[in-house]
Image (cartoon, rainbow, N blue to C red; front, side, top):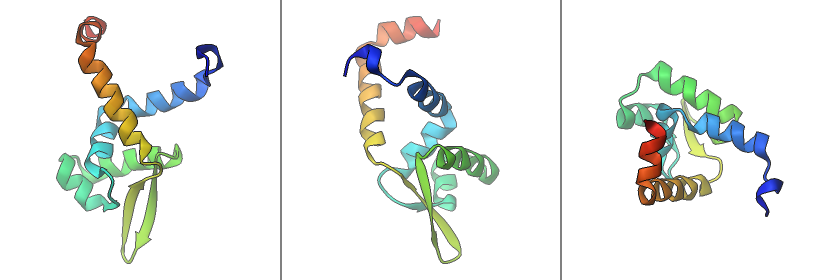
Length: 105
């Protein structure tokens, strides 16, 4: 796919959602498992209200999905390839640290 054929608006919306640090913390805490909100809270240290808010945003964007299991809702990644995408992005950032540091200045 050529750069000028990328769905720019769609990518922009996804990157905006993923640019929030707490959402990245939540995604990384979930890994490849379906987990209840209580596990996400324990792993991230975020409040229940904060976790629920961010899960709703990501659920509405199609990044995570909730599955009812008894009295609990377990959250899973809608598509596990997002973990690979985040790892690749982190690797790119690490290999281009000077550029990333310059962008933060």
